[in-house]
Length: 241
Length: 206
Image 1 (cartoon, rainbow over the protein chains, first blue to last red):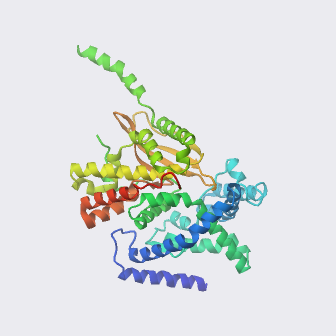
Image 2: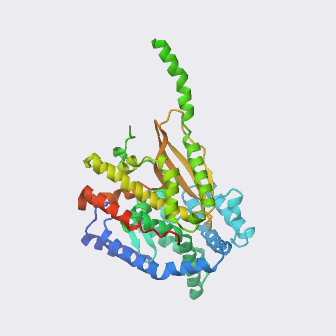
Image 3: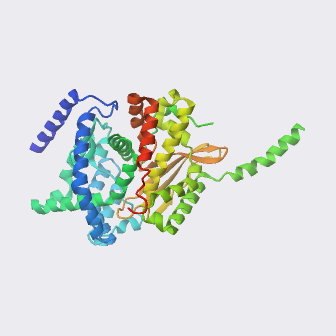
C-alpha cells in the first residue's frame, strides 16, 4: 500500500509541476517541459548504457539464442496478457492466450520456443493500461517515465499494476537475482529495437514530438485492438483530383 | 453518332478497368519485387542506404501520392501555403520519407508477410490494404496497413500505418509547431536541412 501512496504522491507532484510548465501546444501533453527533460535524460542513459550493452548482447549471442531469451520473457508476459483479456471480457482470447502459455511452457521448453504461434495462436498485446482504456478510462496527460519512457497518467498507473503482476516479481524473492532477470529482459527488449532506433533517428525532425505522437497513436491502436475508429479531424484531407 | 460513341465507351470501359491493377495485388507485387531486389543486392544488405534509396525511387515512389501525404501532415496549414511552397513541402517530405524507408530497408531480412483479404467494393475509390509482418526475434507480428486512393494512373498509397502508427500524421504536431514558430518557409528550411544532414549517408558500412 505504501507504494500506492508513493505513486499517488508522484502523480500529484507531476500534476503540480504541470501548473508551472508551459505547454508546447499539444493538448495531450501539458507536461511537455518536464517530459522533455526526462526524455533527454532517458536518451542519454540509453545512449551511454543500454544501447552499447544491447549491441554487445546482439554481437555475442547467436540469433537463435536471442530469440529464445525473447520468447522466454514473452511467455511469462502471456500469463498477465490472458488475465487482461478476461478483465476486458474477451474470454475466447483469454483462453487462447492461456493455452499459449500452456503450450509454450511445455512443448516450447519453458517458453524458449514460440510453439503456439506456429499452431495458429498468435501473440497478443495486452496490459493493464489497455484494460483501463477498454473500460473507458481516457489516457490523460502524456508522461515520460524515467528509464521506462513514454507513458501517460492512465498507462503509468497500468504499468505500475503490470509490475506488481509480473511473474518475475511474484515468483523470484531473491532481490539481486530478480534484478538481474529484469536487466536481462531490458537488454533483450532493447536489442530487438536496435534497428527501429536507427529508423527513428532518420525519420524525426524533433525526436521528442515524433516519439510522443507515434506512441499516443500506438496506444490508441492497441486499446482498440488494431481497429480504432477514424478520428474526425481529417477534414483537411480530401482525395486529390 | 451518339450511340456509336456510347458503344465505343462501353466496349472500352472494361479494358480500361482491367488495366488498373487491384490495390492489394499492387502492394504485394511491389513488395515481392523489392524483397527480391534486396536479396540480390549485397550492398544494400551491407547497409548502403544510398542504393536502397535508388531502389525505392524506382520501384516504390511512383505508387505514392506525396502531395496528399504532405497535405495530411500539414493539416490546416496546407491551405495557407502558396502553390510553390506546397510543391517544395511535398518534395522535401518525399525525400525525408524515402531516406527513412531506406534506413529500414537495409535492416530488412527475409520476413514473412501475410496479406489480409481486401475488404472493398468494386466501386470504392479509397481502400486499406492490410498486411502483417512476422519479425525475427519477436513473436508478435507487426501490422502494416496501406491507405490507398484510386487515381487515373492506378492506385496510389497516401499513408502507411505501422502497428497503427501513421507515417504521415505522426509529423503533424512537429510540422504545426515549426510553422507556428518559424512559418511555412521555416518548416521547408528545417526539412531541407534534415535531408542535407543525412546527405552524408552512412553508405557502404553500417
